[in-house]
Image (cartoon, rainbow, N blue to C red):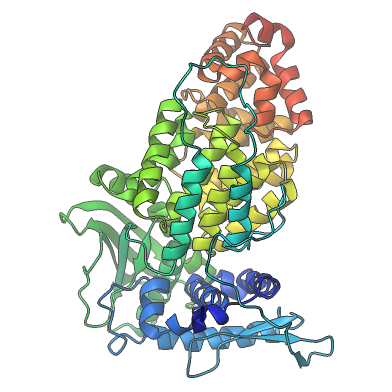
Length: 596
């Protein structure tokens, strides 16, 4: 059988790994961290080249799939790809003159095409020939090396970890949660088989834009046309706001209206903002409107001292705060989209995001079923894979709705699929962090957490999740600043943000500051909030309150009553932190509440 040019152009595994490592270094640099559109552009063309799909790197494909332009995009009337290509070439040149001067692989995009070139440099800085590439067939079932139990990289090829799924199918599943009573039920299909089928389908469809729809937001800002200084500030603010919003790439798609284009084409929301000069200050008024029914969803206004130049730090900070308010997982856009949408795949994503608010088994099951239904219809929808990975971690840590086999293997495969489909997605890296952490691979987990923050340093959910991991292993001084930023940024945050901030302060002996966080979760009945309430009231010597909180915790988390230390260990707490929690609650209180 003759291989297509696409197949023969695919990079061999060692070469692909090296190029992806080079790409990660570039994306982590200061210049690319502050330019998500350039990062998405570079990531898109490099991945296409690695996969042997260079022939697809045309202006139309890049505009639609990398920049989110609609299907009727016209490259002649909208020069977005040519403009961004020029910016990308310049940014790469600057990177290799500075941070990347010693990189062993250089990535470039020659003028006249959008296909990247990979050059290997020797110790003397001269270009050397890379190792010969071998052709790799497109057969997902080909034999590939298995993933180690604790993988150290995220850039696995699809074939590598599909093999693990295949091996897992012939291994007798270990019985988890074996001490809990179970009913005799009919044999269920192995979830690894189903997931492997979805992954194979996702691999086939990864090159096409997913049919599932993210909320589209158009940002339209205006300023006084006869005031050049103000007009320049408005344009700079627009760029900053769009860049910041675009980092929430699993929750929204954002664009600015092209010249002469329909402002509302394909949009769900339009954020309009007008700025006028008031002496030495600027007065801004903004509103978010629903395109579907014309509702004004949210308005805001502010008067600010006129920033000194388009690079003023305060301009960036205002854009950051506004982007977080609009685009975070519990922000304005998603609060409205949750209510207005009943059949969208995003409803399943929102259900999954809400699980850690309640940690109820029925909510977890509904969200998992919903996500699996979305992936049956559209396996290339990467936000669903990220959320499925996070839900599957909860299956292991909290014992929610366990399925046959290893939940951590399924969680790993789902997270790797999300990363494979969307390497620049911060949420996919967050999922990798939680999976690695649950597997005990803390170094890999923190590496993924840092990668998530590089891709989106504005998402409070990622900040809080990353900070919580440090607190759980007894490093509260490193986790607390992240948690404080998350709490300050998210007005609609779930109570677990404050639980981990409380625990960090408690471990550091800052009881007064811990009390401020306790005031937030005392009215919440999720397991972590109940645990926090018991710890808080134990410090106040409120014996009836501690007893009531512990009894409610045993009902919300039955494993805590059966084996409190095992429950806390499954949740990811280190032995030292578990010792402190158990000591602070006190053996007598625990025994009196039926806790073992």
